[in-house]
Image (cartoon, rainbow, N blue to C red; front, side):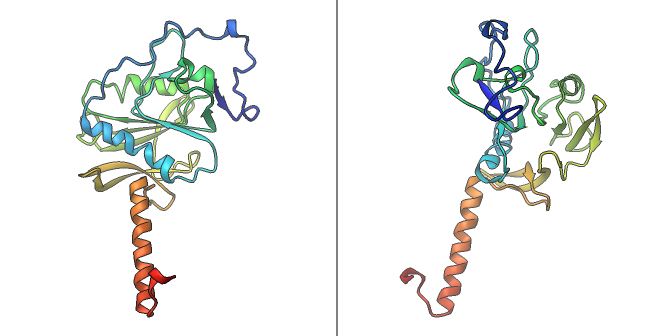
Length: 237
């Protein structure tokens, strides 16, 4: 089952529940093979998950995923965030098992701390139905990225949950996550545009694995150049 680190390490809140009292997943559709709506959204989703695993020093367990069902009630269809981040949880055992294919709140014992929605049209309900449901299930931070300004007057709006409803907040630093959100102009996978990125307290984006590898290569090149300037051949060290 999906394990969390509360109340005891390695044990979920449902670990002690008798098997016949736990929700039956047999009739739940955890994936329907519906593709993402456009190429930009697909890339943006990965840019919100891959850097966390490649470069973020969270200091704790976490689960980041894109376009995965978020089941909050047995008899309700799931929400499918473009990206979410849940702290202090992990999946143990077989990732292909049905109970691990989606994010079941009754398995993890908690809602994700943050959800990001990427607007691609006016029919997604990001500022209406989805916002209400995310508040109801207790998502602490909710971000809406609308690069085409289809449903809101600015590209990025971030909200924090207070008294069971959302209030606008600055996304520059989200203290519970230890991360911020920022708009970044740059190139990702040969596509130059404005992207939504996770960042640190100083506004520096969390690099992708490729960006970090390039940074390390350039650092090594600078060091080699300094050594050559001192008359030292770095290849002989």
